Image 1 (tube, helix red, strand yellow):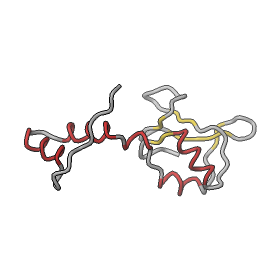
Image 2: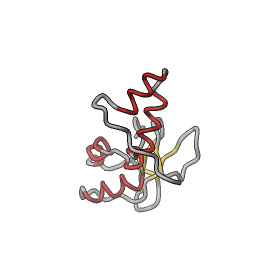
Image 3: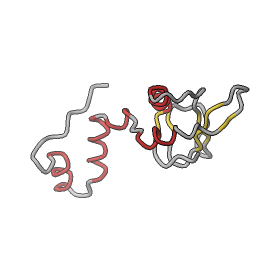
Image 4: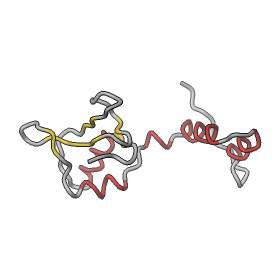
Length: 112
């Protein structure tokens, strides 16, 4: 299956298991990056493995779980701030993005 959004493979495997869908390891292939990553990106091919270890399609029920999947790592305050900064082309737009329409502020960056 070709991905149309970013997917956290470990999180997706946990979500599939919670939905009662058994899969072996999840993996992706991409023309731009090697396999063995923890994220699948749009354009990657997502697959699992059969009992013999050969790549195969995910079970049919996995499509519903994949459609609802939102990688936790993409919703951090740092990512929200980065998105606001990148989407702003003027100082006024940046200020509006950081303060929000209701005057609430974007959460501060976490220390690294």
